[in-house]
Amino acid sequence: MPDKRTHRGKHPEDGRYFNESSLSQIRRAVRDLSWLLSNGYAEKSSLKLVGDRFNLSQRQRMAVMRSACSDEDLHTRQVKNTNSVDVAGKKLLLDGYNIITTVETALSGGVVLKARDGSFRDIAGIHGTYRKIQETLPALDLIGRTLVLLHVTGAQWYLDSPVSNSGRLKTLLYQLADENHWNWQVEVVTNPDSILSLSEEIVATSDSIILNRCHKWFDLTGMIIREHIPDAYLIDLSTV
Image (tube, rainbow, N blue to C red; front, side):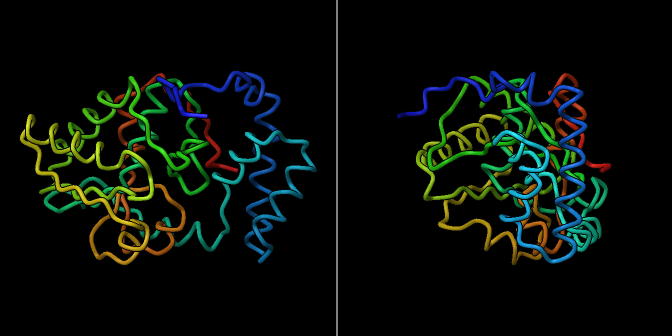
């Protein structure tokens, strides 16, 4: 079935899945899953064990999975996290879909997670096809204006070629860059993760695999949401 959504907003059951009572269980589940991962247990079986223990829905389990991490990974990501002062005067590499869809979700009123490692993530992400929605242009505008405020020398975007409509999004990014005199370069590549993981430049992403492997990362989505989307549906799971 084609994706005909015009927003990336709340799931109809999110009010129930993430109410105060449910959040208590979810926080305990994130804590337990993080403990299991820290002690070498496999993620898939550990998530099932924790999800079954707390009787979590599939969407709640996804939130737990995207928020938990081992103590080792937590330390690695914290050490590599850089601040806005360090970003100034440097080129920033952007994990395109990761950044865009999270900001779109926040603008749409969808659930955004502050994970254990402090990064901001949406729940679902995209599955093979990117569809422009009503929040796409506002999201790109916020990203562009934030990059200007950060005084970066330029932004290098990476988009996944296996994701449908990447070529159209590339054209839109260049159009906005031309209109606003933003120094953006856009590449559509097979696997942005491998490029971003190996780069010596600072990377803007919340992708856990990249965060573990990259040289340095910057929490661009977190900055945008904190400073420009104060009414975002933010669920803080960073202190479990």
